[in-house]
Length: 173
Image (cartoon, rainbow, N blue to C red; front, side):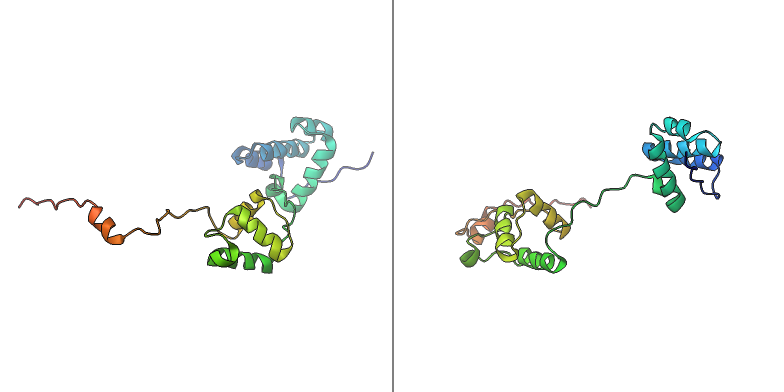
């Protein structure tokens, strides 16, 4: 059987247990408690059982703990697939959204996700789903907002005359 990987020497069981007690993440706390059991001299198999994992998984966590300390035991968000548009294309997409559509050229008066999907496909040769367009816009800092509709023949003078104004209140002296 191969030799077990030694734990960092700058930590000990009480200190690791104290970190586990103060930790808000239950999974990280459970991993810390398993490592504290190893510091106490428990076998790796028994310590892994305490943390609800197998010995190989504990070994992987020992590597991360030795490299990064207690913060290395927290779950990480998976990086996911890289986006298809590069930074220059994302900047160009941001400019397209910021300037808005030209009704004569684009045939629309405001951008919708389906419209932007077609624009991206035509200009950059990349196919995205409508849902992915929302993610791209969020990454660019845009939020879903829709302007209040305005009738093309609406008259500002009539709107001003229609608005009700409250009489001024008299103040006691």
